Amino acid sequence: PRFICMVILGLFLISISSFTAKAQKGKPSPPPPDPAIAYITGSPWHGDLNVMNADGTNVHTLVADGRVLGSTSPSWSPDGGQLVFVQNDTRQGWIRFVDKTGIISDLRIPIGGSSYAEPKWSPVPAADGQDKILYADGSVPIPPNIAQSDFFLMNTDGTGTVQLTNEPGEKFYPTWNP
Image (cartoon, rainbow, N blue to C red; front, side, top):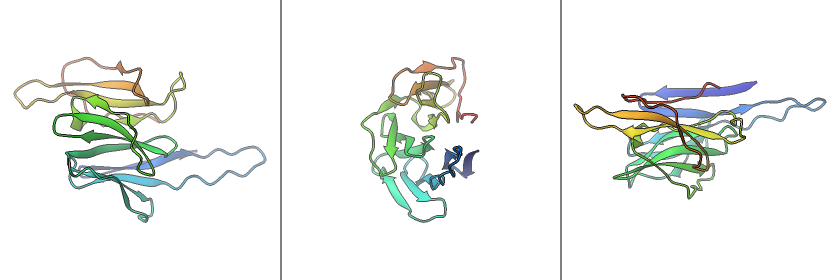
């Protein structure tokens, strides 16, 4: 069976990694990996990316971003080994990747509507065998201007970006159906 749990508390998204338990014929199932919780501390736009065990132990900071505009929107990879998140600076948002040890990938994917990207890792690889990231991007101007943001899909290596929507209006918080 597949286990996924997500909890939204106020403005902070806390996600627990998902895993699939599979039994092999004649062998006991290995224990599932320990679930971990990723969350942002500080404010939603000036925060550090933190991780802790599901029982509240082993709290530690993976990405200390308080010096810039911070990290937002963490989402676990299906195997629980990496997180995709948004890292903001004063003029630009970036989709970034970090592993469970805090090593941040050199890959920086620029996005326009940085605070609203909400990247989500696909729960299973696509037909082409690639893991995918679903995210929102676009401009979010101050009213009375009309803003437009759309949903995009890309490979986890930053290639193969496909725009999924192209219609007026803002779109936020994309998510996958597992």
